[in-house]
Length: 515
Ligand code: NG1
Image (tube, rainbow, N blue to C red; front, top):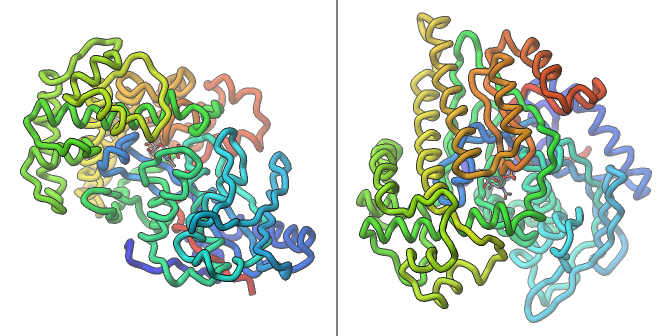
Protein backbone atom coordinates (compact mmCIF):
# COMPACT_ATOMS: atom_id res chain seq x y z
CA UNK A 1 0.00 0.00 0.00
CA UNK A 2 2.88 2.36 0.79
CA UNK A 3 4.16 2.06 -2.80
CA UNK A 4 0.95 3.37 -4.37
CA UNK A 5 0.75 6.84 -5.90
CA UNK A 6 -1.18 9.65 -4.20
CA UNK A 7 -4.80 9.43 -5.37
CA UNK A 8 -6.29 12.12 -7.56
CA UNK A 9 -10.02 12.33 -6.82
CA UNK A 10 -12.70 13.56 -9.14
CA UNK A 11 -15.74 12.80 -6.96
CA UNK A 12 -16.65 13.07 -3.28
CA UNK A 13 -18.08 9.57 -3.44
CA UNK A 14 -14.57 8.17 -3.95
CA UNK A 15 -13.33 10.08 -0.91
CA UNK A 16 -16.06 9.39 1.61
CA UNK A 17 -16.91 5.85 0.55
CA UNK A 18 -20.68 6.15 0.00
CA UNK A 19 -23.21 8.42 -1.64
CA UNK A 20 -24.89 9.57 1.60
CA UNK A 21 -21.66 10.64 3.23
CA UNK A 22 -20.63 12.39 0.00
CA UNK A 23 -23.91 14.27 -0.11
CA UNK A 24 -23.60 15.51 3.45
CA UNK A 25 -20.07 16.79 2.69
CA UNK A 26 -20.98 18.49 -0.60
CA UNK A 27 -22.35 21.66 1.06
CA UNK A 28 -19.11 22.16 2.95
CA UNK A 29 -16.99 21.67 -0.17
CA UNK A 30 -19.12 24.05 -2.22
CA UNK A 31 -18.96 26.69 0.50
CA UNK A 32 -15.16 26.37 0.54
CA UNK A 33 -14.86 26.80 -3.23
CA UNK A 34 -17.23 29.79 -3.26
CA UNK A 35 -15.44 31.41 -0.37
CA UNK A 36 -12.13 30.89 -2.21
CA UNK A 37 -13.42 32.78 -5.21
CA UNK A 38 -14.66 35.65 -3.04
CA UNK A 39 -11.36 35.95 -1.19
CA UNK A 40 -8.93 35.53 -4.09
CA UNK A 41 -11.05 36.65 -7.05
CA UNK A 42 -10.27 33.47 -9.00
CA UNK A 43 -11.35 29.85 -8.89
CA UNK A 44 -9.46 27.22 -6.93
CA UNK A 45 -7.96 24.58 -9.23
CA UNK A 46 -7.32 21.89 -6.60
CA UNK A 47 -8.34 20.85 -3.10
CA UNK A 48 -5.84 18.93 -0.98
CA UNK A 49 -7.57 16.73 1.57
CA UNK A 50 -6.16 14.87 4.57
CA UNK A 51 -8.37 13.07 7.14
CA UNK A 52 -8.01 12.84 10.91
CA UNK A 53 -7.77 9.42 12.44
CA UNK A 54 -8.92 7.47 15.43
CA UNK A 55 -6.49 5.05 16.98
CA UNK A 56 -8.44 1.97 18.01
CA UNK A 57 -5.61 0.60 20.15
CA UNK A 58 -1.85 1.06 20.61
CA UNK A 59 -1.14 4.34 22.37
CA UNK A 60 2.29 5.90 22.74
CA UNK A 61 4.04 2.90 21.27
CA UNK A 62 4.62 4.08 17.69
CA UNK A 63 7.74 6.00 18.69
CA UNK A 64 9.00 2.83 20.40
CA UNK A 65 8.45 1.30 16.90
CA UNK A 66 5.65 -1.11 17.90
CA UNK A 67 2.63 -1.64 15.63
CA UNK A 68 -0.61 0.34 16.07
CA UNK A 69 -4.18 0.03 14.81
CA UNK A 70 -5.75 3.28 13.63
CA UNK A 71 -8.32 4.11 10.96
CA UNK A 72 -8.93 7.37 9.08
CA UNK A 73 -12.19 9.13 9.91
CA UNK A 74 -14.54 11.39 7.98
CA UNK A 75 -13.51 14.67 9.65
CA UNK A 76 -10.70 16.21 7.61
CA UNK A 77 -8.63 19.23 6.63
CA UNK A 78 -9.30 20.71 3.20
CA UNK A 79 -7.05 23.24 1.47
CA UNK A 80 -8.42 24.92 -1.66
CA UNK A 81 -5.59 26.07 -3.91
CA UNK A 82 -4.48 27.76 -7.06
CA UNK A 83 -1.36 29.43 -8.41
CA UNK A 84 -1.29 33.17 -7.95
CA UNK A 85 -0.16 35.39 -10.86
CA UNK A 86 1.99 37.52 -8.53
CA UNK A 87 5.74 36.85 -8.88
CA UNK A 88 8.22 36.11 -6.08
CA UNK A 89 6.96 32.88 -4.52
CA UNK A 90 4.40 34.54 -2.23
CA UNK A 91 2.21 32.24 -0.21
CA UNK A 92 -1.06 33.65 1.03
CA UNK A 93 -2.80 31.37 3.49
CA UNK A 94 -6.27 32.19 4.69
CA UNK A 95 -8.28 30.12 7.18
CA UNK A 96 -12.08 29.88 7.14
CA UNK A 97 -11.99 29.81 10.91
CA UNK A 98 -11.96 33.47 11.93
CA UNK A 99 -9.79 32.78 14.97
CA UNK A 100 -6.86 32.29 12.64
CA UNK A 101 -5.56 35.37 10.85
CA UNK A 102 -4.54 35.51 7.18
CA UNK A 103 -0.80 34.96 6.72
CA UNK A 104 1.57 35.85 3.90
CA UNK A 105 5.11 34.62 3.64
CA UNK A 106 7.83 33.70 1.16
CA UNK A 107 10.70 31.26 1.40
CA UNK A 108 14.27 32.55 1.51
CA UNK A 109 17.52 30.77 0.64
CA UNK A 110 20.11 30.50 3.36
CA UNK A 111 23.24 28.33 3.49
CA UNK A 112 22.10 26.02 0.70
CA UNK A 113 18.67 25.50 2.27
CA UNK A 114 15.23 27.00 1.97
CA UNK A 115 13.93 28.67 5.11
CA UNK A 116 10.31 29.55 5.81
CA UNK A 117 10.57 31.14 9.28
CA UNK A 118 8.67 28.73 11.53
CA UNK A 119 8.13 30.29 14.94
CA UNK A 120 8.11 27.46 17.50
CA UNK A 121 8.09 29.75 20.54
CA UNK A 122 4.31 29.95 20.39
CA UNK A 123 1.53 27.98 18.77
CA UNK A 124 0.69 29.56 15.41
CA UNK A 125 -1.68 27.98 12.92
CA UNK A 126 0.43 28.84 9.90
CA UNK A 127 3.39 26.92 11.37
CA UNK A 128 1.67 23.73 10.20
CA UNK A 129 1.33 25.17 6.69
CA UNK A 130 4.96 26.29 6.73
CA UNK A 131 6.11 22.89 8.01
CA UNK A 132 4.66 21.24 4.89
CA UNK A 133 6.23 23.92 2.68
CA UNK A 134 9.67 23.51 4.23
CA UNK A 135 9.86 19.79 3.48
CA UNK A 136 8.64 20.12 -0.11
CA UNK A 137 11.01 22.98 -0.89
CA UNK A 138 14.08 21.32 0.55
CA UNK A 139 13.35 17.92 -0.96
CA UNK A 140 12.05 18.88 -4.39
CA UNK A 141 13.30 22.36 -5.25
CA UNK A 142 16.91 23.33 -5.89
CA UNK A 143 18.03 26.40 -3.99
CA UNK A 144 19.48 27.79 -7.22
CA UNK A 145 16.19 27.25 -9.05
CA UNK A 146 14.01 30.21 -9.94
CA UNK A 147 11.69 31.36 -7.12
CA UNK A 148 9.04 28.82 -6.13
CA UNK A 149 5.47 29.37 -7.34
CA UNK A 150 3.20 31.94 -5.71
CA UNK A 151 0.14 30.21 -4.25
CA UNK A 152 -3.17 31.22 -2.71
CA UNK A 153 -4.60 28.81 -0.18
CA UNK A 154 -7.84 28.65 1.81
CA UNK A 155 -7.92 26.19 4.70
CA UNK A 156 -10.91 24.65 6.45
CA UNK A 157 -11.09 21.76 8.89
CA UNK A 158 -13.62 19.57 10.64
CA UNK A 159 -11.11 17.72 12.86
CA UNK A 160 -11.36 19.34 16.29
CA UNK A 161 -7.94 20.71 17.37
CA UNK A 162 -6.25 19.12 20.39
CA UNK A 163 -8.77 16.31 20.49
CA UNK A 164 -6.59 13.28 19.77
CA UNK A 165 -8.06 12.87 16.28
CA UNK A 166 -4.84 14.12 14.83
CA UNK A 167 -5.75 17.49 13.42
CA UNK A 168 -2.07 18.47 13.42
CA UNK A 169 -0.97 15.53 11.28
CA UNK A 170 -3.94 16.08 8.93
CA UNK A 171 -2.94 19.73 8.62
CA UNK A 172 0.70 18.91 7.84
CA UNK A 173 -0.24 16.17 5.36
CA UNK A 174 -2.71 18.51 3.60
CA UNK A 175 -0.18 21.32 3.42
CA UNK A 176 2.60 18.99 2.20
CA UNK A 177 0.22 17.75 -0.52
CA UNK A 178 -0.71 21.32 -1.45
CA UNK A 179 2.87 22.37 -2.08
CA UNK A 180 3.65 19.15 -3.91
CA UNK A 181 0.76 19.57 -6.33
CA UNK A 182 1.28 23.29 -6.89
CA UNK A 183 4.99 22.80 -7.62
CA UNK A 184 4.31 19.93 -10.02
CA UNK A 185 5.98 17.31 -7.80
CA UNK A 186 2.98 15.17 -6.81
CA UNK A 187 3.84 12.34 -9.19
CA UNK A 188 7.33 12.12 -7.69
CA UNK A 189 6.06 10.76 -4.35
CA UNK A 190 4.36 7.54 -3.27
CA UNK A 191 2.08 7.24 -0.24
CA UNK A 192 4.99 5.89 1.82
CA UNK A 193 7.19 8.84 0.87
CA UNK A 194 4.42 11.28 1.71
CA UNK A 195 4.16 9.67 5.17
CA UNK A 196 7.90 10.07 5.76
CA UNK A 197 7.91 13.63 4.44
CA UNK A 198 4.92 14.63 6.58
CA UNK A 199 6.56 13.05 9.65
CA UNK A 200 9.75 15.03 9.14
CA UNK A 201 7.72 18.14 8.46
CA UNK A 202 5.74 17.78 11.68
CA UNK A 203 8.97 17.58 13.66
CA UNK A 204 9.62 21.16 12.50
CA UNK A 205 6.69 22.24 14.67
CA UNK A 206 8.43 20.81 17.71
CA UNK A 207 6.82 17.42 18.31
CA UNK A 208 8.84 14.23 17.92
CA UNK A 209 5.90 12.35 16.54
CA UNK A 210 5.95 8.63 15.90
CA UNK A 211 4.40 8.33 12.45
CA UNK A 212 1.10 6.63 13.19
CA UNK A 213 -1.06 9.66 12.38
CA UNK A 214 0.60 10.53 9.13
CA UNK A 215 0.45 6.88 8.02
CA UNK A 216 -3.24 6.59 8.92
CA UNK A 217 -4.08 9.90 7.27
CA UNK A 218 -2.27 8.94 4.05
CA UNK A 219 -2.68 5.17 3.64
CA UNK A 220 -6.21 4.38 4.96
CA UNK A 221 -9.00 2.95 2.83
CA UNK A 222 -12.74 3.25 3.56
CA UNK A 223 -13.12 -0.46 4.24
CA UNK A 224 -10.81 -1.38 7.13
CA UNK A 225 -8.52 -0.33 9.96
CA UNK A 226 -4.76 -0.42 9.40
CA UNK A 227 -2.17 -2.42 11.25
CA UNK A 228 0.84 -0.13 10.89
CA UNK A 229 4.30 -1.31 11.84
CA UNK A 230 7.43 0.80 11.81
CA UNK A 231 10.17 -1.79 12.24
CA UNK A 232 12.28 -2.63 10.32
CA UNK A 233 10.49 -0.22 7.95
CA UNK A 234 7.08 1.38 7.60
CA UNK A 235 4.53 -1.23 6.59
CA UNK A 236 0.77 -1.38 6.77
CA UNK A 237 -1.83 -4.04 6.19
CA UNK A 238 -5.63 -3.79 6.36
CA UNK A 239 -7.44 -5.32 9.35
CA UNK A 240 -11.17 -5.84 8.82
CA UNK A 241 -13.24 -5.04 11.87
CA UNK A 242 -15.22 -8.30 12.35
CA UNK A 243 -18.60 -8.30 10.67
CA UNK A 244 -20.28 -9.57 13.81
CA UNK A 245 -23.97 -9.60 14.74
CA UNK A 246 -24.51 -7.27 16.42
CA UNK A 247 -22.07 -5.18 14.38
CA UNK A 248 -19.23 -3.20 15.95
CA UNK A 249 -19.34 0.60 15.86
CA UNK A 250 -16.68 2.94 17.21
CA UNK A 251 -18.12 6.04 18.82
CA UNK A 252 -15.99 9.11 19.50
CA UNK A 253 -16.66 11.21 22.59
CA UNK A 254 -14.70 14.40 23.14
CA UNK A 255 -13.72 15.09 26.77
CA UNK A 256 -13.73 18.79 25.84
CA UNK A 257 -10.37 19.15 27.56
CA UNK A 258 -8.08 20.70 24.95
CA UNK A 259 -4.63 19.27 25.15
CA UNK A 260 -1.98 21.03 23.21
CA UNK A 261 0.78 18.57 22.52
CA UNK A 262 3.24 21.14 21.23
CA UNK A 263 2.85 23.47 24.21
CA UNK A 264 3.08 20.79 26.92
CA UNK A 265 5.63 18.65 25.05
CA UNK A 266 8.48 19.09 27.54
CA UNK A 267 6.48 17.73 30.48
CA UNK A 268 4.27 15.32 28.55
CA UNK A 269 4.82 14.02 25.02
CA UNK A 270 8.54 14.62 24.49
CA UNK A 271 9.30 13.56 28.06
CA UNK A 272 7.61 10.22 27.36
CA UNK A 273 9.67 9.87 24.18
CA UNK A 274 12.86 10.35 26.20
CA UNK A 275 11.72 8.08 29.06
CA UNK A 276 10.90 5.23 26.69
CA UNK A 277 14.20 5.61 24.82
CA UNK A 278 16.24 5.52 28.02
CA UNK A 279 14.11 2.60 29.23
CA UNK A 280 15.06 0.68 26.08
CA UNK A 281 18.76 1.05 26.88
CA UNK A 282 18.22 0.02 30.52
CA UNK A 283 16.19 -3.02 29.42
CA UNK A 284 18.86 -4.01 26.89
CA UNK A 285 21.52 -3.74 29.56
CA UNK A 286 19.52 -5.92 31.96
CA UNK A 287 18.93 -8.53 29.26
CA UNK A 288 22.50 -8.55 28.02
CA UNK A 289 21.37 -7.34 24.57
CA UNK A 290 24.11 -5.38 22.82
CA UNK A 291 23.52 -1.73 21.92
CA UNK A 292 26.03 0.66 20.33
CA UNK A 293 27.38 3.43 22.56
CA UNK A 294 25.79 6.21 20.50
CA UNK A 295 22.72 4.25 19.41
CA UNK A 296 19.26 5.54 20.28
CA UNK A 297 17.79 2.04 20.42
CA UNK A 298 14.01 1.62 20.78
CA UNK A 299 12.06 -0.88 22.90
CA UNK A 300 10.90 -2.72 19.77
CA UNK A 301 14.49 -3.19 18.62
CA UNK A 302 15.58 -4.48 22.02
CA UNK A 303 12.73 -7.00 22.08
CA UNK A 304 13.64 -8.12 18.54
CA UNK A 305 17.35 -8.52 19.26
CA UNK A 306 16.58 -10.44 22.42
CA UNK A 307 14.32 -12.78 20.43
CA UNK A 308 17.04 -13.39 17.81
CA UNK A 309 15.79 -11.03 15.07
CA UNK A 310 18.49 -10.24 12.50
CA UNK A 311 19.29 -6.79 11.12
CA UNK A 312 16.50 -5.59 8.79
CA UNK A 313 14.29 -8.60 9.72
CA UNK A 314 10.86 -8.78 11.32
CA UNK A 315 10.19 -11.75 13.62
CA UNK A 316 6.48 -11.46 12.83
CA UNK A 317 3.45 -11.10 15.11
CA UNK A 318 3.44 -14.59 16.68
CA UNK A 319 7.05 -14.59 17.84
CA UNK A 320 6.74 -10.98 18.92
CA UNK A 321 3.74 -11.85 21.07
CA UNK A 322 5.64 -14.66 22.80
CA UNK A 323 8.69 -12.45 23.36
CA UNK A 324 6.54 -9.66 24.85
CA UNK A 325 4.89 -12.09 27.29
CA UNK A 326 8.27 -13.26 28.50
CA UNK A 327 9.82 -9.82 28.73
CA UNK A 328 6.97 -8.37 30.78
CA UNK A 329 8.15 -10.68 33.58
CA UNK A 330 11.77 -9.62 33.11
CA UNK A 331 10.97 -5.94 33.65
CA UNK A 332 10.23 -6.69 37.34
CA UNK A 333 13.81 -7.85 37.78
CA UNK A 334 15.55 -5.23 35.68
CA UNK A 335 13.95 -1.91 36.63
CA UNK A 336 13.88 0.04 39.85
CA UNK A 337 10.17 -0.15 40.69
CA UNK A 338 9.95 2.87 43.01
CA UNK A 339 6.44 4.32 42.63
CA UNK A 340 7.69 7.90 42.34
CA UNK A 341 10.30 7.03 39.67
CA UNK A 342 14.04 7.63 39.73
CA UNK A 343 16.17 10.77 39.74
CA UNK A 344 18.22 12.03 36.80
CA UNK A 345 21.42 10.73 38.41
CA UNK A 346 19.91 7.29 39.01
CA UNK A 347 18.69 7.18 35.43
CA UNK A 348 22.12 8.01 34.00
CA UNK A 349 23.65 5.29 36.20
CA UNK A 350 21.07 2.71 35.10
CA UNK A 351 21.84 3.52 31.45
CA UNK A 352 25.51 2.60 31.95
CA UNK A 353 26.60 5.75 30.06
CA UNK A 354 28.79 8.60 31.27
CA UNK A 355 26.83 11.78 32.06
CA UNK A 356 28.10 13.60 28.99
CA UNK A 357 27.36 10.75 26.58
CA UNK A 358 23.91 10.34 28.15
CA UNK A 359 23.15 14.01 27.70
CA UNK A 360 24.31 14.00 24.11
CA UNK A 361 22.25 10.93 23.23
CA UNK A 362 19.01 11.58 25.10
CA UNK A 363 18.71 15.23 26.02
CA UNK A 364 20.66 17.42 23.64
CA UNK A 365 18.01 17.38 20.89
CA UNK A 366 14.87 17.84 22.93
CA UNK A 367 13.63 19.99 25.76
CA UNK A 368 12.22 18.06 28.71
CA UNK A 369 11.44 19.02 32.26
CA UNK A 370 11.19 16.51 35.14
CA UNK A 371 12.74 15.67 38.48
CA UNK A 372 11.71 12.00 38.45
CA UNK A 373 11.60 9.53 35.58
CA UNK A 374 9.27 6.51 35.68
CA UNK A 375 11.10 4.08 33.44
CA UNK A 376 9.54 0.95 34.95
CA UNK A 377 5.93 2.09 34.55
CA UNK A 378 6.53 3.42 31.03
CA UNK A 379 8.14 0.16 29.92
CA UNK A 380 5.31 -1.89 31.39
CA UNK A 381 2.80 0.22 29.50
CA UNK A 382 4.64 0.03 26.19
CA UNK A 383 5.23 -3.73 26.27
CA UNK A 384 1.72 -4.59 27.47
CA UNK A 385 0.09 -2.17 25.01
CA UNK A 386 2.12 -3.66 22.14
CA UNK A 387 0.82 -7.06 23.22
CA UNK A 388 -2.79 -5.82 23.31
CA UNK A 389 -2.47 -4.52 19.73
CA UNK A 390 -1.36 -7.97 18.57
CA UNK A 391 -4.21 -9.62 20.49
CA UNK A 392 -6.78 -7.13 19.12
CA UNK A 393 -5.53 -7.77 15.60
CA UNK A 394 -5.68 -11.52 16.11
CA UNK A 395 -9.30 -11.35 17.34
CA UNK A 396 -10.23 -9.25 14.28
CA UNK A 397 -8.45 -11.49 11.79
CA UNK A 398 -9.95 -14.69 13.15
CA UNK A 399 -13.50 -13.30 12.89
CA UNK A 400 -13.40 -11.29 9.71
CA UNK A 401 -16.02 -13.44 7.99
CA UNK A 402 -19.57 -13.85 9.38
CA UNK A 403 -19.95 -17.03 11.41
CA UNK A 404 -22.70 -19.63 11.46
CA UNK A 405 -23.69 -18.75 15.05
CA UNK A 406 -23.41 -15.01 14.61
CA UNK A 407 -25.34 -13.75 17.65
CA UNK A 408 -23.40 -15.63 20.32
CA UNK A 409 -20.11 -15.24 18.55
CA UNK A 410 -20.66 -11.55 17.89
CA UNK A 411 -21.05 -10.65 21.52
CA UNK A 412 -18.06 -12.73 22.49
CA UNK A 413 -15.90 -10.94 19.92
CA UNK A 414 -17.11 -7.52 21.06
CA UNK A 415 -16.40 -8.48 24.67
CA UNK A 416 -12.85 -9.58 23.80
CA UNK A 417 -12.09 -6.40 21.86
CA UNK A 418 -13.74 -4.26 24.54
CA UNK A 419 -11.73 -5.88 27.32
CA UNK A 420 -8.48 -5.06 25.51
CA UNK A 421 -9.59 -1.44 25.07
CA UNK A 422 -10.44 -1.16 28.77
CA UNK A 423 -7.08 -2.61 29.77
CA UNK A 424 -5.42 -0.11 27.45
CA UNK A 425 -7.21 2.78 29.18
CA UNK A 426 -6.15 1.51 32.61
CA UNK A 427 -2.53 1.24 31.46
CA UNK A 428 -2.56 4.70 29.81
CA UNK A 429 -4.01 6.18 32.96
CA UNK A 430 -1.95 4.46 35.66
CA UNK A 431 1.33 3.48 34.02
CA UNK A 432 1.82 5.98 31.22
CA UNK A 433 -0.08 8.81 32.93
CA UNK A 434 -1.38 10.22 29.66
CA UNK A 435 -5.06 10.30 30.64
CA UNK A 436 -6.74 12.99 32.76
CA UNK A 437 -9.60 13.11 35.28
CA UNK A 438 -12.20 13.90 32.58
CA UNK A 439 -11.07 11.08 30.27
CA UNK A 440 -11.06 8.58 33.14
CA UNK A 441 -14.58 9.69 34.01
CA UNK A 442 -15.80 9.70 30.40
CA UNK A 443 -14.50 6.19 29.64
CA UNK A 444 -16.09 4.89 32.85
CA UNK A 445 -19.44 6.52 31.96
CA UNK A 446 -19.16 5.09 28.44
CA UNK A 447 -18.91 1.57 29.84
CA UNK A 448 -21.90 2.29 32.10
CA UNK A 449 -23.79 3.55 29.05
CA UNK A 450 -23.34 0.18 27.34
CA UNK A 451 -19.93 0.28 25.62
CA UNK A 452 -18.00 -2.99 25.53
CA UNK A 453 -14.80 -1.04 25.84
CA UNK A 454 -13.71 2.57 26.06
CA UNK A 455 -10.33 4.27 25.99
CA UNK A 456 -8.62 7.54 25.23
CA UNK A 457 -7.38 7.86 21.68
CA UNK A 458 -4.31 9.77 20.50
CA UNK A 459 -1.80 11.44 22.75
CA UNK A 460 -4.28 11.91 25.62
CA UNK A 461 -4.03 14.42 28.49
CA UNK A 462 -7.40 15.53 27.11
CA UNK A 463 -9.06 15.11 23.73
CA UNK A 464 -11.27 12.21 22.71
CA UNK A 465 -12.16 8.73 23.86
CA UNK A 466 -13.20 5.93 21.51
CA UNK A 467 -15.82 3.42 22.61
CA UNK A 468 -16.83 0.10 21.11
CA UNK A 469 -20.62 -0.12 20.95
CA UNK A 470 -22.94 -2.75 19.43
CA UNK A 471 -24.65 -1.24 16.39
CA UNK A 472 -28.26 -1.39 17.62
CA UNK A 473 -27.22 0.23 20.91
CA UNK A 474 -25.59 3.31 19.37
CA UNK A 475 -28.55 5.75 19.67
CA UNK A 476 -29.21 4.74 23.31
CA UNK A 477 -25.49 4.95 24.09
CA UNK A 478 -25.25 8.46 22.66
CA UNK A 479 -28.32 9.59 24.56
CA UNK A 480 -27.07 8.18 27.86
CA UNK A 481 -23.54 9.56 27.62
CA UNK A 482 -24.89 12.96 26.58
CA UNK A 483 -26.81 13.07 29.85
CA UNK A 484 -24.32 11.46 32.19
CA UNK A 485 -21.10 13.33 31.29
CA UNK A 486 -21.68 16.67 33.03
CA UNK A 487 -19.77 18.94 30.54
CA UNK A 488 -22.14 17.79 27.75
CA UNK A 489 -25.20 19.17 29.51
CA UNK A 490 -24.33 22.74 28.64
CA UNK A 491 -23.76 22.07 24.93
CA UNK A 492 -26.20 23.02 22.17
CA UNK A 493 -27.56 20.22 19.96
CA UNK A 494 -25.09 21.17 17.22
CA UNK A 495 -22.12 21.23 19.58
CA UNK A 496 -23.13 17.88 21.00
CA UNK A 497 -23.19 16.37 17.51
CA UNK A 498 -19.58 17.45 17.05
CA UNK A 499 -18.55 16.12 20.46
CA UNK A 500 -20.21 12.69 20.24
CA UNK A 501 -20.43 10.81 16.96
CA UNK A 502 -20.11 7.35 15.45
CA UNK A 503 -17.13 7.08 13.12
CA UNK A 504 -17.14 6.00 9.53
CA UNK A 505 -13.77 4.97 8.10
CA UNK A 506 -12.75 7.15 5.16
CA UNK A 507 -10.14 7.05 2.44
CA UNK A 508 -6.66 8.44 2.97
CA UNK A 509 -5.28 11.77 1.78
CA UNK A 510 -5.44 12.85 -1.83
CA UNK A 511 -5.94 15.74 -4.21
CA UNK A 512 -9.28 16.68 -5.74
CA UNK A 513 -9.10 18.32 -9.13
CA UNK A 514 -11.72 21.04 -9.50
CA UNK A 515 -13.28 20.97 -12.95
P1 NG1 B 1 -2.09 12.83 18.45
O1 NG1 B 1 -1.74 13.80 19.49
O2 NG1 B 1 -3.40 12.22 18.66
O3 NG1 B 1 -1.96 13.41 17.11
C1 NG1 B 1 0.23 11.63 19.10
C2 NG1 B 1 1.31 11.33 18.07
C3 NG1 B 1 1.24 9.88 17.58
C4 NG1 B 1 1.21 8.92 18.74
C5 NG1 B 1 0.09 9.34 19.71
C6 NG1 B 1 0.03 8.49 20.96
C7 NG1 B 1 1.88 13.24 16.65
C8 NG1 B 1 1.61 13.92 15.37
N1 NG1 B 1 1.14 12.18 16.91
O4 NG1 B 1 -1.03 11.60 18.50
O5 NG1 B 1 2.33 9.61 16.72
O6 NG1 B 1 2.45 8.85 19.38
O7 NG1 B 1 0.26 10.69 20.15
O8 NG1 B 1 -0.24 7.18 20.64
O9 NG1 B 1 2.75 13.64 17.40
